[in-house]
Length: 319
Image 1 (tube, one colour):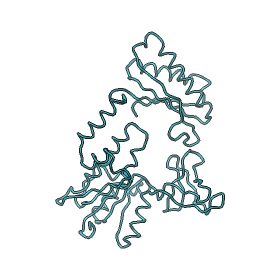
Image 2 (cartoon, rainbow, N blue to C red):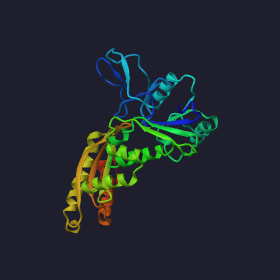
Image 3 (tube, helix red, strand yellow):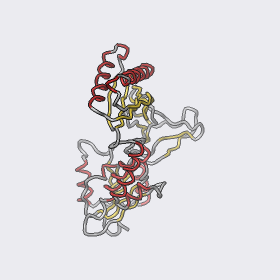
Image 4 (cartoon, rainbow, N blue to C red):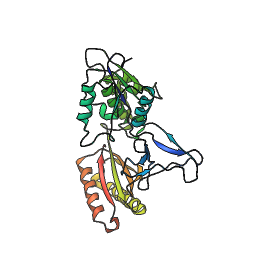
């Protein structure tokens, strides 16, 4: 209907590629990156499997190592574009994600072409959500709008709400009213409903209550100390030694007013990237000046310890 009215549509799916992965229909195994502990993403444009962390890629195998057939699962922006071209072969589409944006084909060029040529549909990742003023766009569709709710970060709800309210605001910026549709597996979720209503105050009241209950920022600080290296055992030992040093220091009289609990070290959500194993220590604390100085001292001590050669450590506060 939007196309027939001569208007434009933006479709947001915050996952690039054609499919999330390939899976064998017999043994259920999926091709994984040899450098990272993640599944390879299928890209239909060049029929390759790619790792979005280290850049590794390989041709799509004809069959699984067990001899079984490989089937695609999940959906990415490439798949959405292919489906649209199959359903509406005469309708031009444009796509803006990390695979289409380059030094030559920039964000500005894609958006300029979309606006000047009147392309009916623009498909993209979160780059299509922010700061675009396109008067002819009267329909916005969000596919799998709940994807970022399950990232594991304490900011997951905030990130999802921000992205949805921004992309919903791309519709109806001209003279005609716009429509936004959010597709999700959890339509009853409070965050999605508040984002659909553009209810900033309602979301704030919901989120601030949850954060206060869990002592998350701004009521407390969440600090992660990440350890990386190519020897997994050495990385784990280094993280445990750092934790023990921190616990020992916190027992000293000068830190009796400080609050800090340590959890881990445990594997990061992606335990290995580009041959480097990653473990992290999670600290729930209040990041005072004294605690910052203590962590800085422990990091220097960690770097000077010969047993930690080949292991890097860095601190992230409320990241």
